[in-house]
Amino acid sequence: MVEAGVFTPEDRLELVAGEVLAMTPQGSPHATSVSLVAEALRLGCAGKVHVRVQLPLALGSDSEPEPDVAVVAGSIRDYAEAHPQSALLVVEVADATLVYDRDTKGSLYARAMVPEYWLVNLVERVVEVYRDPVAAAKARFGWSYRTVQRVSPDGSMTPPASLTGSIAVADLLP
Image (cartoon, rainbow, N blue to C red):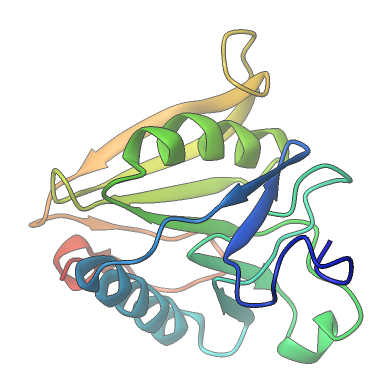
């Protein structure tokens, strides 16, 4: 579509369930939180996995979202020819897009069997941790997460097994 002149390379877009969607411009708190999340996860990875910031995940022929942060197996060069098709952990930072990220993106990641999804909720200053994808007829894409935990700023989360240590919610909030 860029080659056809429908969109420009500067347009911030993502493909979700066959729809090309414009991405909301980022405010300073959102951008700061994305950077804090990426830094905290990189420190916890110790080079075992690759932390990608706002880069595509190829989640089937109809969806190529660009999550704020994704932790994927392998190294940077493993994705020189194709985007990763899954992730060990996906993190979205949300303020204006909170409901969309919770319901639509959460269901999309569950359908793709992403084992863990974190939603950094800037509105309520908590991190919502979603684990254990399961089929759910009422969910947007027929999938949701069985386990949901809300972690307050004084709490911490333990990332998936491939990462080490725990991450304090306060370290992810601007």
